[in-house]
Each structure stands twice: as structure tokens, then as C-alpha cells.
Image (cartoon, rainbow, N blue to C red; front, side):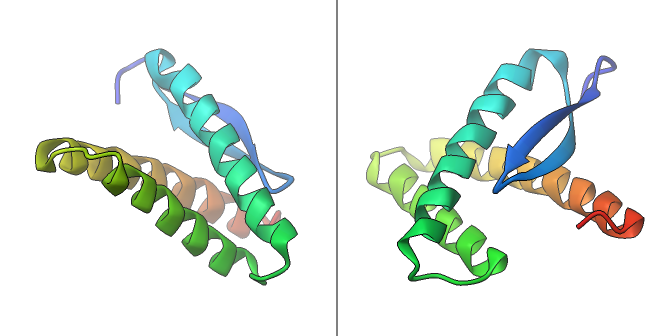
Length: 104
């Protein structure tokens, strides 16, 4: 991360998360969070999947499937996987802070 990293608020399933993000990646992070929120809301609304963990896993599987079906080559898939891993680490860090504070 660059030196201008700061936390921004994103909302997923009506919960607020503070995620550290470089200034130049904020718009992409906000768009990603909105897309993820929309997908998770859709899955929750179907009534077929219960529990936030299962909803998150189903959303991740759906998104991974979209990437694979897009015809991306191995290098692109590796780049996506790395970016997803970085975003996941940021979310885990934010969730950890909320859990410690009793905000979950």
C-alpha cells in the first residue's frame, strides 16, 4: 500500500466496514463493495442460503465463476486472485477490529 492509505467506509449487508485503501484505488474498492453487496443481498433474498458465512461463500463462488467464464488467461486469473486476496485480507482486518470492539 502507498503512503496515502486511509480507511474508507464500505457497506455490505447493512454493516459498515472500514477498509484501508490507497487513494488511487478507492473508487474501485467502493464499486467492488457495491457489487459484492448487491450480489450478497440477492443471494440472501432468494431465501435458499442462510447465514452470512454461507452467503459470502456463495457470492465468492459466483464471482469466481464469472471471472473464469470471462475467458481470462492464467496470468489474468492470477492477478485477479491476488487482488481478491488483498481485498479479503483488508476485510478480515476490518472484521477483526469490529469483533474486538464488539461491533459485529
